[in-house]
Length: 465
Ligand code: NAD
Image 1 (cartoon, rainbow, N blue to C red):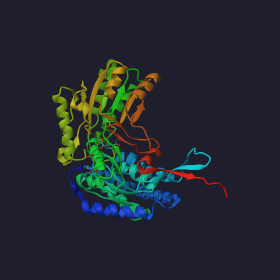
Image 2 (cartoon, helix red, strand yellow):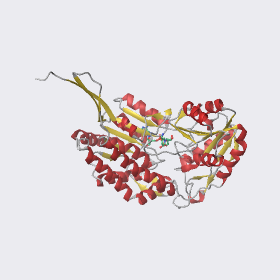
Image 3 (cartoon, helix red, strand yellow):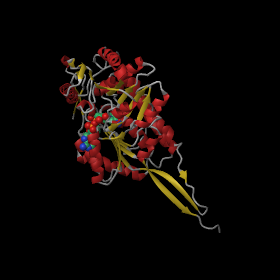
Image 4 (cartoon, rainbow, N blue to C red):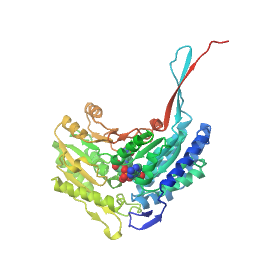
């Protein structure tokens, strides 16, 4: 499998495209490791040390991993250094720290019995990940799954597998036993599908599109009814009320909400909902911020807006821009291809106004730097627009009215609601979606639910001799 850099289209590596026989072998090895107890039966304090060592190995190569991530998928290196790498390291440390501090439960049993509710690892877990945060999203799955005692097989996205492959080596250096963690690069339709259909895989933790997420559920149903956790797409609204305390901050958030990582972000604030009385001025302010953003080489430290992952994704985004125009949205600024002479895949951002909820750009996840703006007249209309989506990953609400803010929190169907901010979070808070944005949560202690089975033990007490 050839790996091309979106920075200039050049070939940067050739890696294995695994096939069904590799999946068989990887699952068999992972199963043997699990059954042997070599990992899950280690004292928790020892598993913790090895996961800490895994974090150290990653941290000590942060700079090389950052460069590789940027080279492979095109996001600005400053973002990788500031977010992806530190968050990856933190994630391993968080679950390493957590694993020997979580206790099982004793039930409220009658006097002649003791009931215990204990957690056990699922067994063999397949982690299937997308290309937009290759390391960080892999860590969100691998770290809690390993901490819980599972064997884990990581299937990275075809477009960006290189840092994931490195993780395999770093795990070995950190003392994760052979067979407990493996990386299987390859085609989703081949490797991903085979893992999801495998009767000896006990759970799949998937992050990717809703379309593929639905297929993953189907594969689980066709095979062994394995546990399925899905982190899927989004079409998140940023809702700006006229009484917003800081409209400058809201405009910055509205712009960067759809520009960050070139809009290739599951939580991209791709729907901007603005109260009618301020909509003209607010949209002009957002447009002027956007006008100051031009794509550049993501390896350049000053670049804030990098490349689109590949030509296919770039063309998909351009098709959506065409659809927006054809369906009658108002083009506030139209982004075309840029820096074509580099051989890379660069787009300028696009801002649409006057978007109608029935338009394609209002309904479908674009996964690129395209903003669809709507206006509303009152709270109820804002909430109706916000919830008029198949997705429910995140939402932002900007208002100084605390009652309105809380009413919005209760009304909006989304896994995360940001009040007077956007995209703030850390490993301590759960992340995931309502509706077709997914099932289950990454991050926080709740992530352990995905990687553990609950077992009830009922002990009948005999009479003392
Ligand atoms: P994708 O669905 O095309 O691919 C995701 C992964 O699934 C890849 O590893 C791919 O190889 C694999 N895959 C493809 N077909 C498969 C099949 N038939 N069976 C099993 N696996 C298969 O998604 P993508 O283009 O890599 O990523 C973009 C999508 O990911 C967007 O929809 C985005 O919103 C979503 N995403 C969601 C979150 C979240 O946490 N909710 C985070 C990041 C990205």
